[in-house]
Every structure is written in C-alpha cells, then in structure tokens.
Length: 319
Ligand code: NAD
Ligand code: UDP
Image (cartoon, rainbow, N blue to C red; front, side, top):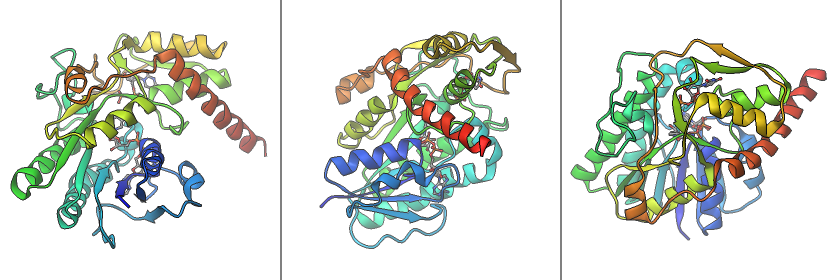
C-alpha cells in the first residue's frame, strides 16, 4: 500500500488532502502540532486503520517508521493574523521544518511536494503573476516572516532536488477557501461570513480596491494531486483566475447570506498586496488542470459550514 506523510494535516488544506489520499487508496500519516489546526478537522478519520495522527512539531527531528512514497509539506501558519502572532514559528517551520521534511524524503526515497504560496510574488509589479516572475517582497515588513520563509523553502527544495536528486514538486497556492477554515483566522472569507451571519459590520481593509482571486478547496486538491503525479519540478501556480476587488467580495458575501450587516472600512495592513491573480497557463498545459467550481457554487458550499460554526459559537456564548 502506498504511504504518504502530510505535515499540517490537521489544518484546513491538510485535512482535505488526508481525505483525498485515503480515497486514492493511500495509507496516510497526518503530522501536526495543532498550533493553528484542530483535531475537529480530522476526527472523522480516526476510525480508519489506514489513518495515523502524529502530534509533532515538524521542526524537530522526524522519525517515521516504514516506507514513505510521498511527503506533502503543508505545515505553516497561513493566515496573516496567525503568522503575525507566530512570526518565529512561521520562519522556523518554513526553514527548519522544510529542511527536516526534505531530509526525511531523501532518507525514504519519497517524492516531496512543498506548499508554497502566491505570497512569494509579494506586492506584485507584474499582473497577472506567472511562475517566472521573481516577486516584490519586503523582507523586513510584518509579512516578510511568511513570504521569506516560503521563498527560502522553495530554494531549499530546489537544492535537495539538484544536489541530492530528491524528486520534488512546488505548488504556489493562491487564495483558497472552503469548509474547515477557522472562523476566527482573520482571512477575508471567514471574517466576512462570520460578520454577515452574526449581523456585525463587515470589516473591509483600505478602500477595498485591492484584488484577490479565490479558488474553492476541491479544485485546489485536484491540482495538488495532478502536480504530485506529474514530472514538473519548477514551481506551478494553482488558483482560480477569477479576480475581484475585496469590496465586491464583501458585497457578494452580503448578497449570498441575505445579511443586514453594514460595511465598515479599516486601515489597510502593511504590505497588503494591491492585486493578485494567477496566470494558470502552465497548470493548464502541463497538468491539464483548471478550476471547475465557480465562486457562487463554492461560496454556497462554504456557507453551510460557517452557519454550523456560527451556531456553535453562539451556543458556547449562551452556555
Ligand atoms: P492552516 O493553518 O489551517 O494549516 C496549517 C497546519 O500546519 C495547521 O494544522 C498547523 O497546526 C500546522 N503546523 C504549523 N506549524 C507546524 C509545525 N511546526 N509542526 C507541525 N504542524 C504545524 O492553514 P492552511 O490554509 O491549511 O495552509 C496550509 C498550507 O498551505 C500552508 O503551508 C500555507 O502556507 C499554504 N497555503 C495556503 C493558502 C490558502 O489560501 N489556504 C494559500 C497559499 C499557501
Ligand atoms: N481583508 C479585509 N477584511 C478582513 C480581512 C481581510 O478587507 O476582515 C482583506 C485583506 O486586507 C486583503 C484581502 O482581504 O487585502 C485578503 O486577505 P486574506 O487575509 O484573506 O488573504 P491575503 O491574500 O491577504 O493573504
């Protein structure tokens, strides 16, 4: 039986990957220190004999008995408020954690896939972003801890490929949303949905003219699966090119939820990218991949999940 190690497996994306690899007939080891993830995301998998959870910090020495066919390195705080609260852990997991995971891949002869990010492009001066753009990152700004950790992780991954011959893959993930995002993780979608469902003002940062392009999690997981099984070593963008302003995104959430919430404008965080849109021509060409779930469909599926989370939160407050 094929065996995969998924670091960060108890997080939003990692938990969906655990499910996908189980469905593909893999035995799955989920490694997570639960710093931003939750056992709630994977507890439905605990009864499966092919599923093993290891509560471990990936920056410490990793010992995994037996063979491994693949390692998916997804461990890292990922939302701006998380990595601003955990700056050192974020730098450590991107650098030391990536080193440990690559070392394990080398020892086991496993294929390694790095979860990198569109943040490698920083506040981009090229739009939309293609993989050969080197980016515009402020290394000493507050977001630098995340962006530079991921850029270092990409460099380390390429070094293990070139110097040690490890089979590596790098995915640059653009804004992805869906069930199992944390209600309070501060990213635009959970913030807006929570606020809309509770009738609180929607916090738009800046004037809301900055753009993002949102991809539904199932599309992303399909892209990861295809990339892992491809022979593409250099970074590949996976995201949905449907770009919109954050103000329009907030209005979309209001419309979908039928909420009476008002909009309130707050200061734009430092170094917040003004535009972001993936050029996915490489993913189309090399992987035959493109997103299939439009924003309305994806948001409706996500709304059901957030309704449950908001109900749970109000029940806790009431008790
Ligand atoms: P998440 O916070 O839900 O998941 C990250 C997981 O990593 C959590 O379960 C956390 O507990 C775990 N973790 C963090 N540090 C760890 C450590 N030192 N040892 C072990 N586990 C650790 O975030 P997510 O949105 O699921 O992101 C997953 C990965 O995808 C991250 O690497 C992130 O940078 C990348 N990514 C995500 C997006 C997105 O839109 N969601 C975009 C670009 C890149
Ligand atoms: N944003 C916002 N209000 C919020 C949270 C985020 O206006 O309550 C904005 C944020 O400034 C950014 C965009 O929404 O311009 C996307 O933010 P998110 O944290 O989801 O992801 P990012 O792409 O910045 O990593």
